[in-house]
Image (cartoon, rainbow, N blue to C red):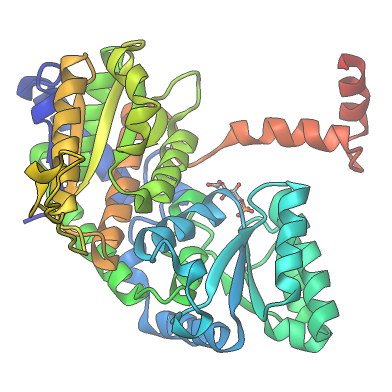
Length: 449
Ligand code: PA5
């Protein structure tokens, strides 16, 4: 029995069984191309067998370095962007107490994980460095290419700060680099300075790398059980490989369902969660699907909302705006904590009809009611349910989304594993900044201004 359930009950008007069945042979071909590594972008299919291939020695090394950081630091700064940032943040935020930063230092089991290198904002960096003046901290710098401007610049600032604070030798003990095995500026720098270094496999692209040290090292630092995360992914890997039939294979079913909707004009998919803990998982999913599918003037636009918060902002548009939307609702069957609504003898707020119910039950009714309302408004809903928000289920969910994304990209006839469009802004930025080697581009861009 799969831990992930896909329900199309609220999309039935748009997705019929016979339409799903029409994809059977196509999906079989895509799955075969994925497993045999014969499809588009096959150089980047290393993630497919990754969970089963992670060995205990690597997990132990990661746990050992995580422990070292936990012992020596109150704060760990994770420096990366895109696929070198979002996966770790998704898991850490999903599984951490949202008020951790405000807890007493001694009652925290793990350091506070903060982020840098995921944007270029000057104020953010100044505030971060000011905070770090007064904290013991370590840095995990992550970049597959080792040359991405945002994390490289943030790391230059953090390295200078660390070296000034602790001296060069001690600073090197506090820096952990995750990068390519052979090339890139970060690789060279790490070797020269003697930083502990982890390698990102060549055949695993950024947004598919959360189950490599890219995600596992920061996640372990945050005190999360990476063994369970990997185990969940392993179970999902085995399940998805075994199930051929679309309706028995949650990743294939989700991929097919979203493409049927897309072909019927539902060009925007909104991933909705009912807990703020899922905010960064939605961000990770947006990157996974957006960067994988948005090419060749095609692709489902991935958007995200956090309900019920966004029912009071985006709810109006979803209910009543342009009808090019479908929603995918991520349901957590069992909240990990329980909170009962008390009786109020005066009942001045008129809420006694809810007394004795759990807050989670009210949230669930909000979710059911919203799905029905949105379906009535012409927005089909796919529901993805996992039993619990824990490391095991999250590992499974991550692998499930990766496989669904690959199948879906192939159905769309795009290469899900490249990102040529990301280069356009970099070229202009380097031209504007007069980077050596960009002289022609600088001249051309000046004329446009
Ligand atoms: O998914 C991807 O490949 C990208 O989002 C990259 O992860 C992102 O651009 C960061 O690249 P790098 O790890 O090379 O710094």
